[in-house]
Image (cartoon, rainbow, N blue to C red; front, side):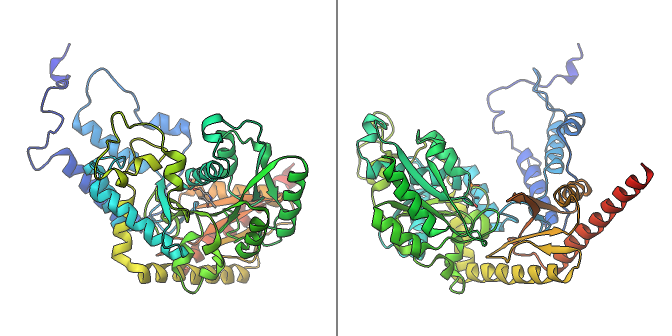
Length: 489
Ligand SMILES: *Cc1c(COP(=O)(O)O)cnc(C)c1O
């Protein structure tokens, strides 16, 4: 056996090997720094399938330690094989780009590696999270609200259901769901996380009633009332309505004031899923989209989407102070939540987690760096750019706008007289293979179209022009291939 090739196994002191300047941390920091600076002007990267990645990359976990050189090459491969989401050419999801203070905040969170469970191990982290929650609550109009950060908007929607259920049916926490046949109401354009939550909480997928939406994707309020009446007539227990502020595909906003009248009439918890559109509240020009928000019971808000604070930055907010702790305070007094002068500051009892990462620091740093006014300008800029994108699409005879945009979601397709859905899917597939743009498609009411998200703060007309012309170029090319194939056969 060649002993020279075998690296030393773990010895005490090797955990923190960074005595000299060229430590691994310094090298990786420089790699990250360089990646961040270059990515904004790079393409999204060629998309590969699992076979190709497995062929090109060594994943094995071995008996012997790897060398630092191998690990550095692993790190480079990881960066290369991950689609670049920092460029304005990435518009596949409802986030794109990363504010530099968000990255800095995340690094600080990692280097301090503490948990938000108790005040004593996260004193400043706890106060920072409380401050940002208070600030968001004030934007909604709640001076004495409550809230927590969550592992995502999906999780925040689940917490909403849990808190609402435990407040409206307090006996369920101890005794289980008993004979209640709980029902909840969301629009047919709502996010799938409500069904996931209904599954987890034992409410059941059939008990999630889907309310029709109009041509713009906004909840049909008369159908909501009919469904509530029908559910009561069936002997069920309707208790929860969620409106969507910024729907995932169309970017539409449900009419909060009209829905509020109904939730008041039937005494239902009113939640707003603002994971995507909640940030609009910071803009005095566009916050009318959530008119009436002050009256609702709770809200989900992801700042990593429109504000660019980095994944995950998700908030569950409620106007009912204390409701979170009442619902979620279960156990842990024996070893972690000690009776002390700071115990009322512990966020653990309000949370579903034990160990919890500090996601608040990055949001707080971004907010401090931009101020309300800076965030407002960023969001107003996105809305202006969305209008430009729509106007540009209307100038291409080959492209067709599917819906008049409600906010930052631009839904359009390449026109074609046959197999239009398959053609648009093929255009996207080729775009991803080319690796210049990463944009999503959606299917709604049997029509498949591009869903362009205007959310990167540096996205401009030049990016848009090259995206639209690439789609047109590929659309024409694929149609040509198809017609020559038909001629040959
Ligand atoms: C993104 C989104 C979610 C899910 O949020 P995650 O943070 O991705 O879990 C829920 N609802 C809506 C409307 C969304 O846009």
